[in-house]
Image (cartoon, rainbow over all chains, first blue to last red; front, side, top):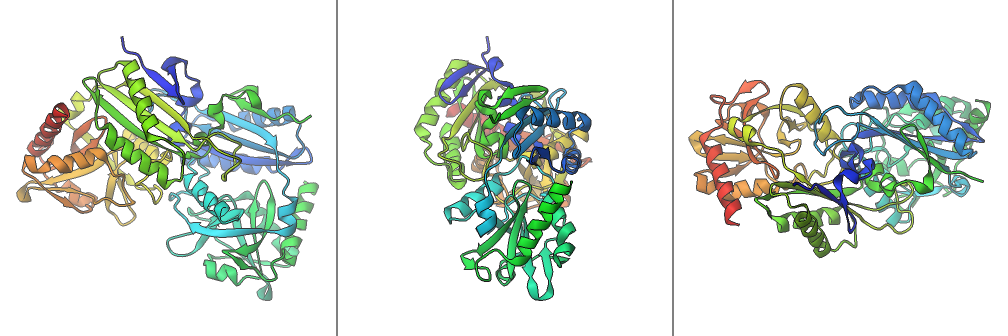
Length: 283
Length: 283
């Protein structure tokens, strides 16, 4: 008799007794898409925008049969149960469970997984700013899809951490900044009152916080200019910052070892943070 | 009190009671590398070559502290326990388990996972050949690393299956074939007795079966020419085939709907299969 078996660390396990998580296409291939939400003061922020992007990601990789209304309900149920005011809600859907085969083996049923955890405290980062370093953008050609294939992002972040930095800024083969390993990237040029960020496309994620920043820029007296910057150009900026759901805006005060302006968060960046804050608490 | 929670499908689970598999960086990021071995007649084939490549993959993504001798021992133990003559041995190592954060959170301990399963029966494919179709190569820039980030490979394969094909042949932005979604790709030009395959580089996996084919080519009367082909050039070939650990050589008799030569496996391809077979059973 054939004995299909598995091994977890040093432990031999009957294949049929494996937790389904081990046989998930998310594990074998990263064959799934995800979202990260946050709550402010006990209220989930921009749930519909995230669901909209999630539905798009699912469609782009051809995962069918997911009811977004059910996903919304699950998120709300789980969030309410956790009762964490400042929470991070992570969720993903994979194509399903089955024998490891790149193609379809029988019918696959999409798999949902979610966690609600407490957000870290980013006040220090927001008040004093962070250091960033550059790393080659090794990612695939569809970075507009929020997929579970994040190894290049991880490699970039690990490199940044080794350099004492909080985030890695990715640079394309053409020598242009695309975005952060897990954030959007912005530069302020004060003399022109320009807020520069890369235009959307397959090279970057359609960041929801990026959209928010673009939306409130005018209130901070800035004109948004969508164009790609090189690292050299970024270092000439008066202010730099990153934008990410979990922290909204975080000032960048050092870029590849070079201080930006006086090395303190800039006034426009602080103004944008206030604008986002106002928007959060009026929504 | 804060209540960190998780949800699997419709079921709310205490975060602390989650199976570790759910919190593995392999699941969140595809932050790991893998290998696939096969056995012929109760004997694992080319174990050392696979271990060598695995060690290189681990090194390239900076997973440290893995003892390859221990991995070898685990593979042999598990394979012997399964007692499957014609088996597929899949194994991976991820960077470890921890809260979802692209960077390092505390110390991570690499996680090993392995399955031994029965190989499918590929005699029909080998005897009659398969159909393949092309798909854009959307992968990252380090395809020489055998990582768990395989979504672009999956998308290519799903597209091929929709077209009634067994494998997808990936085509770069430059219009050149790189390799199959899970195989190396070869073309035979009979008039010159040339066996053409893409040179190694960061765009393709250093396939062990590719190496084997290159090694036995001379016995089949072929000269190996390492160069990239376009799909148009591939369609002019006298013979095409793919090479992959689990099936060694599989003839390709149709490429993007175009019959190759007379639509039957070619004589050089058959000769190479025999050479590999001889090598397998002499080793």
